[in-house]
Image (cartoon, rainbow, N blue to C red; front, top):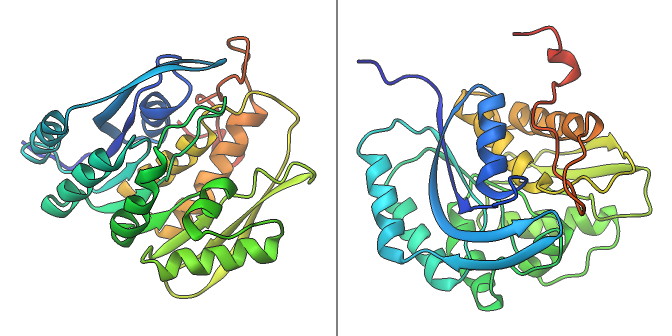
Length: 273
């Protein structure tokens, strides 16, 4: 039996509200034509209004999930999301060193849209020192980039400086997402590739509260495209376009920060099956 259909892995936490975390990752990967697998690091009680509770999985169960996937699937790209605390970060790092799941995208999830912490303060150093050096791509938003680089980011110039600093920490490629610059009409993201080339990805803003899960969605879209064999630059450009489409073609769910529309089609792909 062949085992050659594109397969990807998300290593993250659940979102019972379906908008972020593993839920967003699975919806995105399926929409991008990739079979999704998961390692559940934490479970959250969550909706569009916020995170009500969270429970991290026992390290032994995390180990077993990794072993189970490695024994059966041909995973060619993976991503991390919510990793909870130092012990779980170290457990994930050890497994990523033990097994080959292809290109690794690190989405250093720290705070939920509603403000709840998804990564303990004492885990940030572990992410910086142990996980980032394994990353083929790191995708922080501005607050996450500030935490990792220990610098203040207020301009596009400082975004670029942060990108270079993140690359010096070991990440091969860097995407610094500029969506938190609230005064701008455009969302500008800074990309620094492994070969030293840099460029900006730009999209027009849409005034909406329905942006829950944007970070998970772009990182899982990029992961899916890498699993299909796209180049890093191609995957990044598709990820940006897909997230823009999920916001523009929005849906209204819940009473808080609503989810994206993961059924959205990128304009250039509207006529594709």
